[in-house]
Image (cartoon, rainbow, N blue to C red; front, side, top):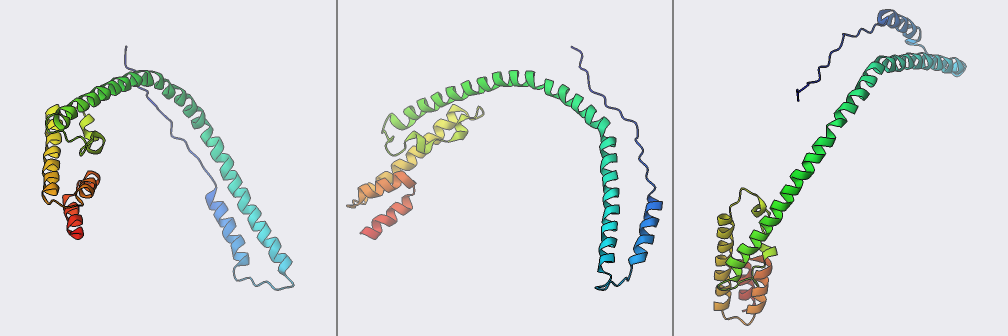
Amino acid sequence: MENITAVITQEQARISCNFEQVEEAIQDKLAEYKGAVFTEDSKNLAKKCVAGLRADKKTFQDNLRDEKKRYMQPWDEFEARANVLIAMYDEPINFINRQVQAFEEKRIEERKALISDLYAECICEINDMSDILPLKKIYNPKWENATVTPKKIRTEMMTRKEEARKAVNTIKEINSDVEEEALSMYRNTYDLTSCISFINRHE
């Protein structure tokens, strides 16, 4: 299918206003009030002056608003038509994207299954340490990325297991009567230094 690109053209619009005349009229009117001093007796006149100036200002603003609306009408109609066409892209985009998302969801589920298998192999088989290192505690969301190889996941798991094994052995070798509490603390924090400090404080 031929690829049609939207080509938008416009003619230079021209807006004019008798700014000079309006400015001169405003300056003349302001000159009337420049330095004017109103008294209690002339306060009603002052109110009328303010009301008149506000009315002139509002008229100018209303004219500006109305002319802007009229000026923008062709664009508003043009944009509405363009938005209808733009929205037409959404149907094929959403249709294809749903399939892409389904592929990705399937890939992630397969990857999660692989991670579970690797966990069983690395953590549970041979010197089971699943009680110290439950999968949910060591799970790294990056493992779900397609760019992370099973070898890298296995290496990270084995590294965590070796660290935990050494830490558990260190705690047990101290032979403290708060060993279980220290092991429980390690399960929660994986911070051997804090566990040893806890044992030392008890001792």
